[in-house]
Length: 126
Image (cartoon, rainbow, N blue to C red):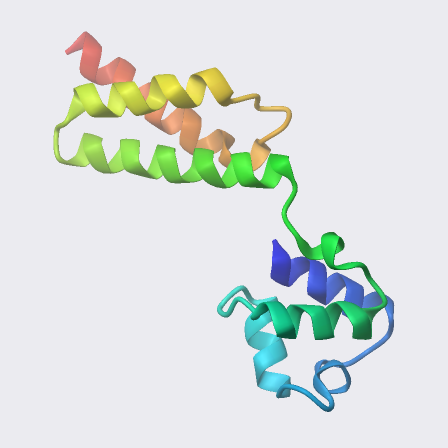
């Protein structure tokens, strides 16, 4: 999400990656950050925020993004548990996700959520 915000802010200012990088980092570094391959240091993030005319808080994840990442991680763990036949642990992880999940707020995790749900139903009915 950070990389996407940096790219959107850069494009809104009409800057190329090279122009944004000028004086501090390389163009390839900006590309890596935008693709989410590299997380910028606090110093570099401050530089980018200043160059893009945005407050540092613009680039920090909000509560919904943090929760969406948590859900993605927990659902991935549940899927891994199903692969190794640890259905009880998968069920526990799924139930925790169910208490947090709202498909209207987290559409990016909806597919995995329903995939785990269906697999657990199949396992329980067997």
